[in-house]
Image 1 (spheres, rainbow, N blue to C red):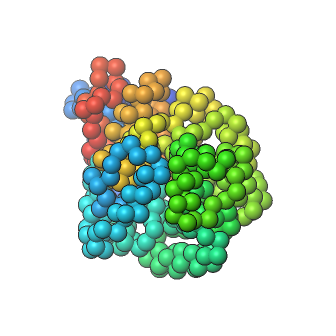
Image 2: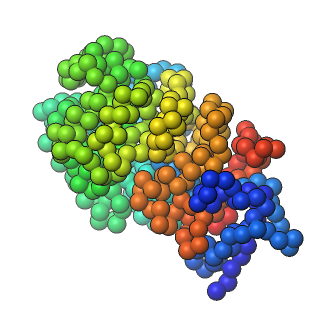
Image 3: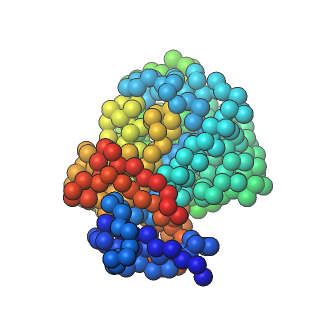
Length: 395
């Protein structure tokens, strides 16, 4: 067995609460499996930075990479939806595939080992099939008209069959409360739950909350203007509405892995309601996307107090300037400095792997695992991220 050693000032195994200092990682050059981890010797070339496991991008829409630099910032969710509807199909299928491959390659080079990705069509499927990055594809379902529920579900079922034929891990998932009729939300949730996984855009904006609670606000008027059918006001938060729709799909509690994405309007009552029925719930935050669309951030302090299983995603290039996990982590650190660097890397690596049920291979540096190894540069004197910090794949 041929092995190599790499060493750095910090090694975040994520098996411990603190990083190892002046440490090495030894790996099998043929299989990339971790062979040993320990204190560096005088012979080791200790890099000034950190070695971390491969990242897990917990929420991405890589098929929307053709929308980079085409959206206006700060339009709110209603304005963002208008732009999606206007620009989504500007590129040819060939161009979309080309850009999907480019950005998946870039994420891989930056150290992303796995991704929970959203798809609305099959344009990313062939790239995913041949790519070294592991992906679980959530086939996003939306449709506001109750009469079209069967047609929409038949369409996503066909897409699901295409993904299965290519050997991709994929299944339908509901998009959000504001793009789906109540019946469609429940039917899509039932299909997703049958696969063991669900990903759901939850509490991304106050507009979403107003829409569900009281049938008011920009998103509600946007839907009415477009002639869409909207659900009756519930007086409840959009997350509680989602829980009600889940119960129509399957009785609680839920042992499936459920990912709630964005969580900008999350509060304690909603956390309690979710934890009561969801036994394996994860919470994805995509801070740069949230700032891009409506200049808001999720309540990370509250999420930390509740010991929620936080994951990190980049969202898409329609609402982000890059798909860079370190930039997301630096944004979180800048706005929530109480979060330690170990926490940040745990959210971006280990928790994402756990959500995907890949923690036996990915997410932490441990003998026998194959997590990928990533070097993060330009840390400050205290070992924290800086605006210059970047990541690059080593293994």
